[in-house]
Image 1: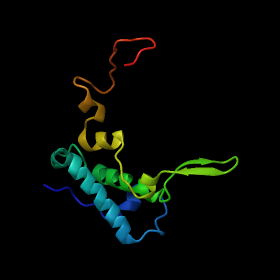
Image 2 (image 1 turned 90 degrees about the vertical axis):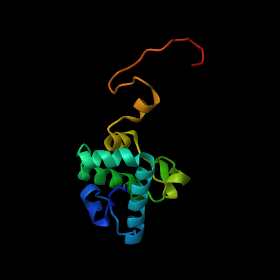
Image 3 (image 1 turned 45 degrees about the vertical axis):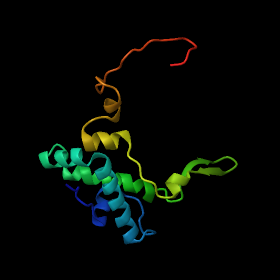
Image 4 (image 1 turned 180 degrees about the vertical axis):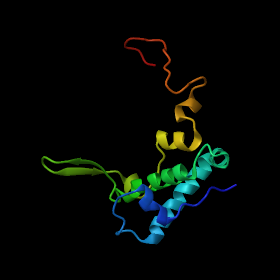
Length: 138
C-alpha cells in the first residue's frame, strides 16, 4: 500500500516562496522524500484515512508540500539571526535538507495528536494534574 506522489506542479498551490534557485529534480526529490517519510512512519494510517475520505487529497498534498517547503524556504539552514551587531546561527540539519513533521502535520495526517500516543487516556483539549513536588525532580 503506497501513498500518492505529490508533483512539482502542486507546489505553487500550497507554497508562495521563490523556487527559481532550485532544479525541478531537487524539488521532486524533496517531495518524494516527504512522501516516503510519511509512508514509513504513518503509511497504513494515512492510506486508510485517504481511502475513507477522512483525510482529503488536498490536505495530504498540502502537508507534503509544507514539509518540503521548510527546506525550500531556508536552504542555508539559518536558525537565528541578530540585527544589532549582525550575526546568525546555522542549524546543520536544516542546511542539509533534513525534513521533519510538526505536531500539526502529524495531526492532519493521522487524525491523532502525537501526545495522545504517548499518554494513555490523553485527549486533545484536556489537561492532567500530576503530583507537585516543589524543588524536586519530576
